[in-house]
Length: 479
Ligand code: ATP
Ligand code: MN
Image 1: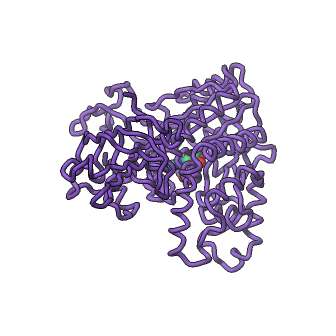
Image 2: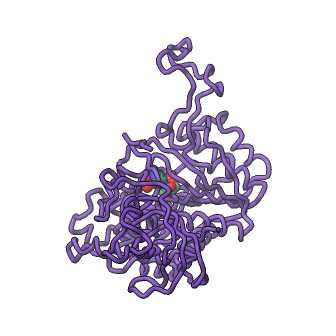
């Protein structure tokens, strides 16, 4: 007999028929006459209730049907008499596939803290919260591919091991097969990476952008979606050492087209999740409402999670230049009352508190900030005519801060080489990158969206460690 998933059984099409269900026991309760077993198989946030009459199932037969056990149930799908569910299974047989000792199984009925669940990340998928989070994550990932596929973008796999440290030097993880105790040394006494596996020093990539640009110069529109790695020691709720990034790169796009695409993209994937994961998002929203009850009134969310997402999907993002953003900050009461910890003046890198003021207090919606000072942005961003700013754009989201970083790229080789020199990057090291400017170069643009930050935004989870299955952060690589 074929197994049917809970999600499909709950649609009720098989009512009156014999069905086979396999899943994990969430709870068992009952009395002398009947036991009610809530079963979940991860296909939906909802459990399916299995009814086991004492006439058919002795206490002994059900003794291993405990929270966490894997079971197979056959029986008739019937309309439920009880409250809380439309359908249930009247069991005729229950087989325990895998026991879960109630004495030692860590997930019991009571609510566990997110911190505790992080320590048992191998089991946390089995909770309502993490079930919802990872189903939403899955939908968002699928929507990413669907969006770009519909637009004719080519999905490009850029390398994970890279010899270019053009971006984020010092923040990279070294990849080596050299003996850590006795590495071969060069004449100058330093480690001789010529003897290493690739014949040169290599690292895990921090971004697929530079290679993405190469592909865009042939396919016009490409995107990457893969893991990136940053050895930055920032223990925040928004940083991971291993995270997934989506990086589209488009030939013949300017900054405005780039921003338009990013906004359309973000709205599209949120809309997809709203359509396909409504119950999960409602559940996660309810979680936040509960969480808010222990907070002072002024720190509570003004909108529910669903309202927030619908608002974002249905309203234009705000667009301001960096210079305008600085003026807004300088003219704010917040600034005048000296409430910012970090200084505000033209030329600063916006701190998290500044970004949050702009999106959460001033505009109350996602904001696209463009045209940043060149000195705080990467060398490949296109120099504006003012000579001071570059055609950069960051998208800031309420509760998260920076979610997208992008720019129009510098296509003029002389200016690009000049900017590389300024940050100490040798032309020889990026000869291949510069070739795209030598041969058929053209105006082009792209951006990077941090996937986990997007998942945080849609699920409302406060800590980025709770939206990736097995987080890698400083001092932590368990599982
Ligand atoms: P931040 O200032 O927040 O550290 P960044 O300027 O270093 O971000 P970019 O280099 O522009 O970020 O990377 C593109 C996107 O990748 C960011 O907008 C963000 O969404 C995401 N991102 C960057 N660093 C991390 C990280 N350590 N963990 C998770 N996501 C990240
Ligand atoms: Mn960073």
